[in-house]
Figure 1: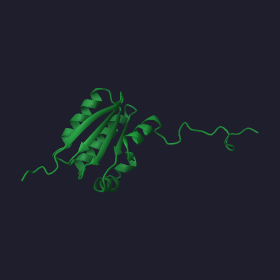
Figure 2: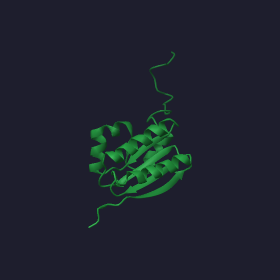
Figure 3: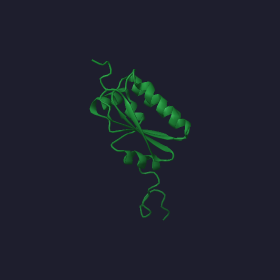
Figure 4: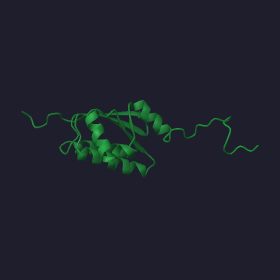
Length: 139
């Protein structure tokens, strides 16, 4: 029996020039996290600022995987980028919630939703109703 129950595979897609979608399958743990770190470093080197991490097929994640997510978040913040975790399964979502990572790193249901947040990082920002009465009205 193999030690690696769920070997890691990572598919790299470029939905646009400044963003990368990393579709991760398998366990994201101490044995596999360095592979994700290498992909992230390569994409940073190529100028990507927005990282969309699709973890829908990650049945297990330990602190090593969580630390990679946090490190990427810290690095891309310095270059006005973002990190988005897509479709975490219940076990992964629980880890993100218990550790508070989900408060810092947005969790979304699709790559499209993540890209929409890239374009408008603060929901509601830039959207206004010109006919809205109230604050700031000079009457």
